[in-house]
Amino acid sequence: MKRSRNEVSRWRMLRQAQRRRSQWVEAQSRTYRHLTRLRHLQLKQQRRSLLFAMTYEA
Image 1 (cartoon, rainbow, N blue to C red):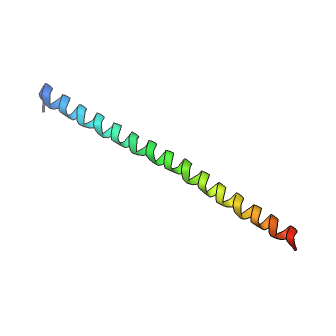
Image 2 (cartoon, rainbow, N blue to C red):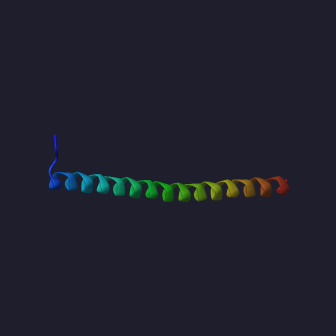
Image 3 (tube, helix red, strand yellow):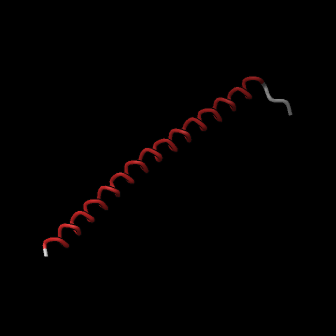
């Protein structure tokens, strides 16, 4: 069945918007992952420095 030009363009626009939205969401999660990793590394470093200080106090 042949689609009208308007129908085709409407589908294309919808698909494009959906792709853009999914790319945005992916970028957000990537940014968030970066931040959580930094926070995790910082906590790890704090724990290690505390352990180091306790070892040399005794």
